[in-house]
Image 1 (cartoon, helix red, strand yellow):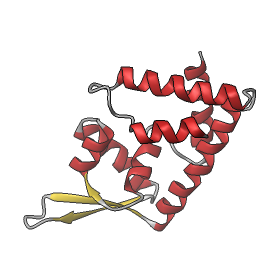
Image 2 (tube, rainbow, N blue to C red):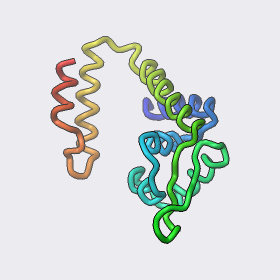
Image 3 (cartoon, helix red, strand yellow):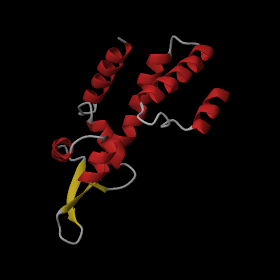
Amino acid sequence: MTARLHRARMGERLNALGLFPGQEQALKSLQTAPMTMGELASLLRVKPPTVSKTIGRLSLQGLVTREGGGRDGRLVQVALTENGQKTAVALDAVWNQVEEELLEKLDAKERKQLRKLLRKAAKGLSKAGADVDEAEDEAEDAA
């Protein structure tokens, strides 16, 4: 139930930015540097047609540009526009607001317990069981 409520709240906040769920991941991924469609698909763990559809919509909104690159011109580089960069920055505030709403009824001890339990759950979901950095675990435990 919590996951469903979180998804709904994020959907509302993304909609206010003119985005659909999933598009925020593409924007944040492109925030640091342009990349090819294939690189983006791999990073987002989706199939290339899914990325093409997402990038097509973001392009129509003026948030990304697509440019031919590489020697043979077939590789397409995707980059954020200035408006795309602003939207990607605004996403941080959205995520922080929704996280605060999620945690507002928890005290510090409960928040710490929740972080620990979520790290355990993430390890259970990861294929290798080691996606969470142990140093990060220790740093969060100290918080």
